[in-house]
Image 1 (cartoon, helix red, strand yellow):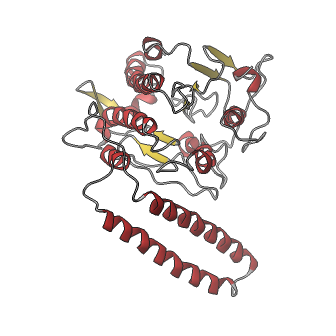
Image 2 (cartoon, one colour):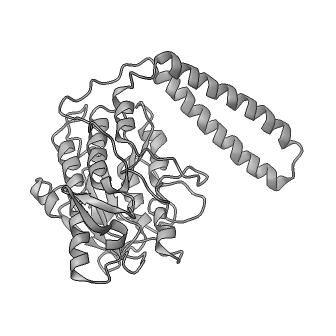
Length: 358
Protein backbone atom coordinates (compact mmCIF):
# COMPACT_ATOMS: atom_id res chain seq x y z
CA UNK A 1 0.00 0.00 0.00
CA UNK A 2 3.05 2.28 0.17
CA UNK A 3 2.51 3.68 -3.38
CA UNK A 4 -1.01 4.81 -2.41
CA UNK A 5 0.28 6.54 0.71
CA UNK A 6 3.10 8.17 -1.26
CA UNK A 7 0.54 9.51 -3.75
CA UNK A 8 -1.41 11.23 -0.98
CA UNK A 9 -4.30 8.76 -1.14
CA UNK A 10 -4.32 7.53 2.45
CA UNK A 11 -7.78 9.02 3.04
CA UNK A 12 -9.27 7.67 -0.16
CA UNK A 13 -9.26 3.88 0.08
CA UNK A 14 -10.29 0.95 2.26
CA UNK A 15 -8.85 -2.55 2.37
CA UNK A 16 -11.17 -5.48 3.05
CA UNK A 17 -10.31 -9.01 4.17
CA UNK A 18 -12.34 -12.14 4.85
CA UNK A 19 -14.51 -12.04 1.72
CA UNK A 20 -14.72 -14.51 -1.15
CA UNK A 21 -17.39 -16.39 -3.11
CA UNK A 22 -17.58 -19.46 -0.82
CA UNK A 23 -17.29 -22.04 -3.59
CA UNK A 24 -17.52 -23.75 -5.93
CA UNK A 25 -14.31 -25.59 -5.18
CA UNK A 26 -11.75 -26.64 -7.75
CA UNK A 27 -8.55 -25.53 -9.42
CA UNK A 28 -8.00 -21.88 -8.57
CA UNK A 29 -6.97 -20.87 -12.06
CA UNK A 30 -10.12 -22.31 -13.57
CA UNK A 31 -12.39 -20.30 -11.29
CA UNK A 32 -10.64 -16.99 -10.61
CA UNK A 33 -12.47 -15.27 -13.49
CA UNK A 34 -15.63 -15.46 -11.37
CA UNK A 35 -14.34 -12.45 -9.38
CA UNK A 36 -17.07 -10.10 -10.68
CA UNK A 37 -19.86 -12.69 -11.04
CA UNK A 38 -19.85 -14.48 -7.70
CA UNK A 39 -20.39 -17.82 -9.39
CA UNK A 40 -19.44 -19.86 -12.43
CA UNK A 41 -23.05 -20.13 -13.60
CA UNK A 42 -24.27 -18.25 -16.67
CA UNK A 43 -24.69 -14.89 -14.95
CA UNK A 44 -23.79 -11.29 -15.59
CA UNK A 45 -20.66 -9.68 -14.16
CA UNK A 46 -20.77 -6.63 -11.91
CA UNK A 47 -19.42 -4.25 -14.56
CA UNK A 48 -21.89 -5.35 -17.23
CA UNK A 49 -24.74 -5.06 -14.74
CA UNK A 50 -23.98 -1.35 -14.26
CA UNK A 51 -22.86 -0.56 -17.82
CA UNK A 52 -26.29 0.10 -19.46
CA UNK A 53 -27.17 2.71 -16.82
CA UNK A 54 -23.80 4.33 -16.13
CA UNK A 55 -22.73 4.26 -19.77
CA UNK A 56 -25.97 5.48 -21.29
CA UNK A 57 -24.65 8.95 -22.10
CA UNK A 58 -21.07 8.12 -23.10
CA UNK A 59 -19.50 7.05 -26.39
CA UNK A 60 -18.74 3.57 -25.05
CA UNK A 61 -21.01 1.73 -22.66
CA UNK A 62 -18.04 -0.17 -21.25
CA UNK A 63 -14.45 -1.13 -22.05
CA UNK A 64 -12.78 -4.44 -21.27
CA UNK A 65 -9.00 -4.17 -21.21
CA UNK A 66 -6.11 -6.57 -20.67
CA UNK A 67 -2.48 -5.61 -20.08
CA UNK A 68 -1.02 -7.23 -23.17
CA UNK A 69 -1.26 -10.78 -24.43
CA UNK A 70 -2.68 -13.59 -22.34
CA UNK A 71 -2.66 -17.38 -22.47
CA UNK A 72 -6.20 -18.07 -21.28
CA UNK A 73 -9.11 -16.83 -19.18
CA UNK A 74 -8.50 -13.09 -19.52
CA UNK A 75 -12.15 -11.93 -19.45
CA UNK A 76 -13.61 -10.73 -16.17
CA UNK A 77 -16.71 -9.40 -17.92
CA UNK A 78 -19.72 -11.52 -18.83
CA UNK A 79 -23.05 -10.76 -20.49
CA UNK A 80 -26.43 -11.51 -18.91
CA UNK A 81 -26.23 -15.04 -20.36
CA UNK A 82 -22.68 -15.63 -19.13
CA UNK A 83 -20.91 -15.06 -22.45
CA UNK A 84 -17.37 -13.66 -21.91
CA UNK A 85 -16.79 -10.18 -23.31
CA UNK A 86 -13.78 -9.77 -25.62
CA UNK A 87 -10.87 -7.77 -24.26
CA UNK A 88 -8.69 -5.12 -25.89
CA UNK A 89 -4.99 -5.86 -25.49
CA UNK A 90 -3.44 -3.10 -27.63
CA UNK A 91 -3.03 0.30 -25.92
CA UNK A 92 -3.05 1.95 -29.35
CA UNK A 93 -6.56 0.59 -29.98
CA UNK A 94 -7.79 2.01 -26.67
CA UNK A 95 -6.18 5.35 -27.55
CA UNK A 96 -7.90 5.38 -30.95
CA UNK A 97 -11.25 4.61 -29.34
CA UNK A 98 -10.86 7.57 -26.99
CA UNK A 99 -9.50 10.15 -29.41
CA UNK A 100 -10.60 8.82 -32.80
CA UNK A 101 -8.82 6.86 -35.52
CA UNK A 102 -7.93 8.98 -38.54
CA UNK A 103 -7.08 5.85 -40.50
CA UNK A 104 -10.64 4.59 -40.37
CA UNK A 105 -12.79 7.00 -42.36
CA UNK A 106 -16.30 7.97 -41.29
CA UNK A 107 -17.62 6.44 -44.51
CA UNK A 108 -16.02 3.09 -43.71
CA UNK A 109 -17.29 3.15 -40.13
CA UNK A 110 -20.83 3.83 -41.36
CA UNK A 111 -20.52 1.01 -43.90
CA UNK A 112 -19.42 -1.46 -41.21
CA UNK A 113 -22.34 -0.50 -38.97
CA UNK A 114 -24.89 -0.88 -41.77
CA UNK A 115 -23.33 -4.20 -42.81
CA UNK A 116 -23.73 -5.46 -39.27
CA UNK A 117 -27.39 -4.50 -39.32
CA UNK A 118 -27.95 -6.37 -42.60
CA UNK A 119 -26.35 -9.51 -41.20
CA UNK A 120 -28.49 -9.33 -38.06
CA UNK A 121 -31.67 -8.93 -40.15
CA UNK A 122 -30.84 -12.13 -42.02
CA UNK A 123 -30.07 -13.99 -38.81
CA UNK A 124 -33.36 -12.90 -37.24
CA UNK A 125 -35.34 -14.14 -40.26
CA UNK A 126 -33.63 -17.54 -40.18
CA UNK A 127 -34.05 -17.88 -36.41
CA UNK A 128 -37.75 -16.92 -36.56
CA UNK A 129 -38.36 -19.56 -39.20
CA UNK A 130 -36.54 -22.17 -37.15
CA UNK A 131 -38.33 -21.29 -33.91
CA UNK A 132 -41.62 -22.86 -35.09
CA UNK A 133 -39.92 -26.17 -35.86
CA UNK A 134 -37.95 -26.92 -32.68
CA UNK A 135 -38.88 -28.45 -29.32
CA UNK A 136 -39.35 -26.29 -26.18
CA UNK A 137 -35.80 -26.86 -24.88
CA UNK A 138 -34.25 -25.71 -28.15
CA UNK A 139 -36.71 -22.83 -28.27
CA UNK A 140 -35.31 -21.60 -24.95
CA UNK A 141 -31.85 -21.57 -26.54
CA UNK A 142 -33.26 -19.60 -29.45
CA UNK A 143 -34.72 -17.08 -27.01
CA UNK A 144 -31.21 -16.60 -25.59
CA UNK A 145 -30.02 -16.16 -29.16
CA UNK A 146 -32.64 -13.49 -29.86
CA UNK A 147 -31.62 -11.70 -26.66
CA UNK A 148 -28.02 -11.62 -27.86
CA UNK A 149 -29.13 -10.25 -31.24
CA UNK A 150 -31.11 -7.48 -29.55
CA UNK A 151 -28.04 -6.59 -27.47
CA UNK A 152 -25.93 -6.30 -30.62
CA UNK A 153 -28.63 -4.23 -32.33
CA UNK A 154 -28.58 -1.82 -29.41
CA UNK A 155 -24.81 -1.48 -29.62
CA UNK A 156 -24.96 -0.83 -33.38
CA UNK A 157 -27.60 1.86 -32.85
CA UNK A 158 -25.40 3.43 -30.20
CA UNK A 159 -22.38 3.45 -32.52
CA UNK A 160 -24.43 5.09 -35.25
CA UNK A 161 -25.63 7.83 -32.90
CA UNK A 162 -22.07 8.65 -31.83
CA UNK A 163 -20.54 8.43 -35.30
CA UNK A 164 -20.78 12.13 -36.14
CA UNK A 165 -19.97 13.50 -32.72
CA UNK A 166 -16.48 14.97 -32.33
CA UNK A 167 -13.82 13.14 -30.34
CA UNK A 168 -11.94 14.94 -27.55
CA UNK A 169 -8.55 16.42 -28.31
CA UNK A 170 -5.59 14.13 -27.49
CA UNK A 171 -3.72 14.85 -24.28
CA UNK A 172 -0.33 16.37 -25.24
CA UNK A 173 1.25 14.96 -22.07
CA UNK A 174 0.47 11.36 -23.02
CA UNK A 175 2.52 9.55 -25.65
CA UNK A 176 2.16 5.99 -26.89
CA UNK A 177 5.41 4.07 -27.39
CA UNK A 178 6.85 4.28 -30.91
CA UNK A 179 6.84 0.49 -31.20
CA UNK A 180 3.96 -1.38 -29.60
CA UNK A 181 4.74 -4.73 -28.00
CA UNK A 182 2.03 -6.78 -26.30
CA UNK A 183 4.24 -9.82 -25.51
CA UNK A 184 4.01 -11.16 -21.97
CA UNK A 185 7.50 -9.79 -21.26
CA UNK A 186 6.04 -6.28 -21.58
CA UNK A 187 3.24 -6.90 -19.06
CA UNK A 188 4.14 -4.07 -16.69
CA UNK A 189 4.71 -1.49 -19.44
CA UNK A 190 1.35 -2.31 -21.04
CA UNK A 191 -0.35 -2.27 -17.65
CA UNK A 192 1.01 1.24 -17.01
CA UNK A 193 -0.38 2.39 -20.36
CA UNK A 194 -3.80 0.92 -19.62
CA UNK A 195 -3.99 2.67 -16.23
CA UNK A 196 -3.19 5.99 -17.91
CA UNK A 197 -5.60 5.41 -20.78
CA UNK A 198 -8.45 4.59 -18.41
CA UNK A 199 -7.82 7.86 -16.58
CA UNK A 200 -7.86 9.78 -19.88
CA UNK A 201 -11.11 8.12 -20.95
CA UNK A 202 -12.79 8.98 -17.64
CA UNK A 203 -11.59 12.59 -17.77
CA UNK A 204 -12.98 12.95 -21.30
CA UNK A 205 -16.17 11.08 -20.32
CA UNK A 206 -15.67 8.68 -23.22
CA UNK A 207 -16.52 5.74 -20.96
CA UNK A 208 -17.48 5.24 -17.31
CA UNK A 209 -17.28 1.47 -16.87
CA UNK A 210 -14.00 -0.45 -17.17
CA UNK A 211 -12.45 -3.75 -16.31
CA UNK A 212 -8.72 -4.35 -16.64
CA UNK A 213 -7.23 -7.80 -16.38
CA UNK A 214 -3.62 -8.18 -15.34
CA UNK A 215 -2.84 -11.52 -17.00
CA UNK A 216 -0.82 -14.19 -15.24
CA UNK A 217 2.04 -14.09 -17.76
CA UNK A 218 3.89 -17.35 -18.29
CA UNK A 219 7.01 -15.79 -19.83
CA UNK A 220 9.75 -13.85 -18.06
CA UNK A 221 8.81 -10.19 -17.74
CA UNK A 222 10.74 -6.94 -17.87
CA UNK A 223 10.97 -5.02 -14.62
CA UNK A 224 12.62 -1.60 -14.82
CA UNK A 225 14.45 -2.60 -17.97
CA UNK A 226 15.78 -5.92 -16.67
CA UNK A 227 14.41 -9.32 -17.66
CA UNK A 228 13.45 -11.28 -14.56
CA UNK A 229 14.62 -14.86 -14.13
CA UNK A 230 11.13 -16.36 -14.06
CA UNK A 231 7.54 -15.54 -15.01
CA UNK A 232 4.89 -13.78 -12.96
CA UNK A 233 3.03 -17.09 -12.83
CA UNK A 234 6.13 -18.88 -11.62
CA UNK A 235 6.83 -16.35 -8.88
CA UNK A 236 3.21 -16.57 -7.69
CA UNK A 237 3.93 -20.21 -6.79
CA UNK A 238 6.69 -19.09 -4.47
CA UNK A 239 6.60 -22.01 -2.02
CA UNK A 240 7.43 -19.50 0.75
CA UNK A 241 10.97 -19.10 -0.61
CA UNK A 242 12.24 -15.65 0.39
CA UNK A 243 13.88 -14.72 -2.92
CA UNK A 244 10.81 -15.69 -4.96
CA UNK A 245 8.49 -13.79 -2.62
CA UNK A 246 10.69 -10.71 -2.96
CA UNK A 247 10.46 -10.94 -6.76
CA UNK A 248 6.69 -11.40 -6.58
CA UNK A 249 6.35 -8.37 -4.31
CA UNK A 250 8.43 -6.27 -6.72
CA UNK A 251 5.98 -7.11 -9.51
CA UNK A 252 2.92 -6.44 -7.39
CA UNK A 253 4.43 -3.19 -6.14
CA UNK A 254 4.40 -2.05 -9.77
CA UNK A 255 0.71 -2.98 -9.98
CA UNK A 256 -0.01 -0.68 -7.05
CA UNK A 257 2.17 2.11 -8.43
CA UNK A 258 0.02 2.08 -11.56
CA UNK A 259 -3.14 2.07 -9.48
CA UNK A 260 -1.85 4.95 -7.37
CA UNK A 261 -1.05 7.01 -10.46
CA UNK A 262 -4.55 6.32 -11.83
CA UNK A 263 -6.29 7.25 -8.59
CA UNK A 264 -4.16 10.37 -8.08
CA UNK A 265 -4.98 11.51 -11.62
CA UNK A 266 -8.70 11.21 -10.82
CA UNK A 267 -8.26 12.99 -7.50
CA UNK A 268 -6.62 15.95 -9.23
CA UNK A 269 -9.45 16.28 -11.79
CA UNK A 270 -13.06 17.37 -11.37
CA UNK A 271 -16.36 16.24 -12.84
CA UNK A 272 -19.15 18.44 -14.26
CA UNK A 273 -20.44 19.19 -10.77
CA UNK A 274 -17.03 20.35 -9.54
CA UNK A 275 -16.38 17.24 -7.43
CA UNK A 276 -13.14 15.33 -7.53
CA UNK A 277 -13.39 12.57 -10.13
CA UNK A 278 -12.08 10.21 -7.49
CA UNK A 279 -15.10 10.95 -5.29
CA UNK A 280 -17.51 10.32 -8.18
CA UNK A 281 -15.75 7.13 -9.31
CA UNK A 282 -15.62 3.80 -7.50
CA UNK A 283 -12.52 1.70 -8.14
CA UNK A 284 -12.40 -1.94 -7.05
CA UNK A 285 -9.01 -3.66 -7.09
CA UNK A 286 -8.69 -7.33 -6.25
CA UNK A 287 -8.16 -10.90 -7.29
CA UNK A 288 -10.23 -14.06 -7.42
CA UNK A 289 -7.30 -15.89 -5.84
CA UNK A 290 -6.46 -15.56 -2.16
CA UNK A 291 -3.22 -17.53 -2.04
CA UNK A 292 -1.91 -18.40 -5.53
CA UNK A 293 0.95 -20.42 -4.11
CA UNK A 294 -1.65 -22.94 -2.89
CA UNK A 295 -4.38 -22.19 -5.48
CA UNK A 296 -6.64 -21.11 -2.60
CA UNK A 297 -9.73 -19.12 -3.55
CA UNK A 298 -10.53 -17.77 -0.07
CA UNK A 299 -10.02 -14.40 1.59
CA UNK A 300 -9.67 -12.35 -1.58
CA UNK A 301 -7.36 -9.32 -1.41
CA UNK A 302 -9.81 -6.46 -2.00
CA UNK A 303 -9.39 -2.70 -2.05
CA UNK A 304 -12.05 -0.07 -2.73
CA UNK A 305 -11.11 3.53 -3.54
CA UNK A 306 -13.09 6.71 -4.13
CA UNK A 307 -16.85 6.87 -4.39
CA UNK A 308 -17.30 9.16 -1.35
CA UNK A 309 -17.23 6.11 0.92
CA UNK A 310 -16.11 6.04 4.56
CA UNK A 311 -12.41 5.32 3.91
CA UNK A 312 -9.01 5.32 5.64
CA UNK A 313 -9.33 1.97 7.40
CA UNK A 314 -9.38 -1.79 7.09
CA UNK A 315 -12.56 -3.88 7.34
CA UNK A 316 -12.07 -7.43 8.63
CA UNK A 317 -15.09 -9.48 7.56
CA UNK A 318 -16.11 -12.78 9.08
CA UNK A 319 -15.77 -11.34 12.58
CA UNK A 320 -18.27 -10.40 15.29
CA UNK A 321 -18.09 -6.76 14.24
CA UNK A 322 -18.53 -7.49 10.52
CA UNK A 323 -19.95 -11.02 10.09
CA UNK A 324 -20.26 -10.77 6.28
CA UNK A 325 -18.66 -13.62 4.36
CA UNK A 326 -19.69 -13.14 0.73
CA UNK A 327 -17.75 -10.88 -1.62
CA UNK A 328 -21.05 -10.04 -3.32
CA UNK A 329 -22.17 -8.37 -0.07
CA UNK A 330 -19.56 -5.75 -0.92
CA UNK A 331 -20.92 -5.50 -4.46
CA UNK A 332 -24.44 -4.75 -3.18
CA UNK A 333 -23.10 -1.76 -1.25
CA UNK A 334 -21.14 -0.51 -4.26
CA UNK A 335 -24.20 -0.86 -6.48
CA UNK A 336 -26.39 1.05 -4.04
CA UNK A 337 -23.73 3.77 -3.83
CA UNK A 338 -23.97 4.07 -7.63
CA UNK A 339 -27.72 4.59 -7.45
CA UNK A 340 -29.03 1.06 -8.03
CA UNK A 341 -32.06 0.27 -5.89
CA UNK A 342 -31.26 -3.37 -5.17
CA UNK A 343 -30.57 -5.43 -2.07
CA UNK A 344 -29.17 -8.57 -3.71
CA UNK A 345 -26.55 -9.36 -6.34
CA UNK A 346 -25.59 -12.90 -7.37
CA UNK A 347 -24.53 -14.81 -4.21
CA UNK A 348 -24.87 -11.92 -1.75
CA UNK A 349 -26.48 -12.55 1.62
CA UNK A 350 -26.40 -9.01 3.00
CA UNK A 351 -24.40 -5.81 2.40
CA UNK A 352 -21.51 -3.81 3.84
CA UNK A 353 -23.43 -0.54 4.18
CA UNK A 354 -22.71 -0.09 7.89
CA UNK A 355 -19.00 -0.66 7.45
CA UNK A 356 -18.45 1.33 4.24
CA UNK A 357 -21.06 4.06 4.43
CA UNK A 358 -21.91 4.34 8.12
